[in-house]
Length: 297
Image (tube, rainbow, N blue to C red):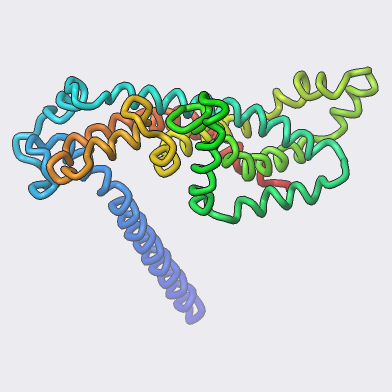
């Protein structure tokens, strides 16, 4: 009888500890949820605030309506839909081209053995250590000089912005692709070579279908990073019609940011819709591709 009491007390103590642990986790989760959702709710509230002023902004606005959205869409002051289309176009072209280059480069580094392979891989990784901000002045001068010879990829062109984005997206994506390719057995390649298949046939018909998870991950990461980029676009693009959405919204607010806060918030929410849709549709592939590509390096 005396031995049963300590056991019961131990069970009671364990239950109490578990209850406290669960309670602490719920509190931490609630704090994190509030911390992440509050800025979104604030921007949504601002977009529905008819006054459109940052000084009078409240979490629950009085007499809320869609006046800011109507002003943004119907006003001819700034071409919002042109900016939106420019962002979609630049992000799509950059993502597709970057995916094609990254896939072939990753396949070469994973399957082929050539002199300087390890040095090149380390060099690619080393370049990514330095922030892109360090190269802004050099990038501006280079694009300006190239534009004197090839105006199509000079300043104030989408072509120059796409080229700069392509150069910045290669490093980490090549490593992701190589890591995923290293998990695919080489027996597939060897069996195909015995049957007389060329390297290109092996890559396009056997390996490429197996790369679907990491292809989706790289495509989405490139798209999101390019779509939301501001600094390079602000430096290289000069005219109103060439602006991307992020640059256009910043110029739209300008010195009257306090008075145009509502319209700015409405534009930010509309601009976020493509990214939200992509995440909702492909979130499983994003997680699966990242975890599988991190298995082997």
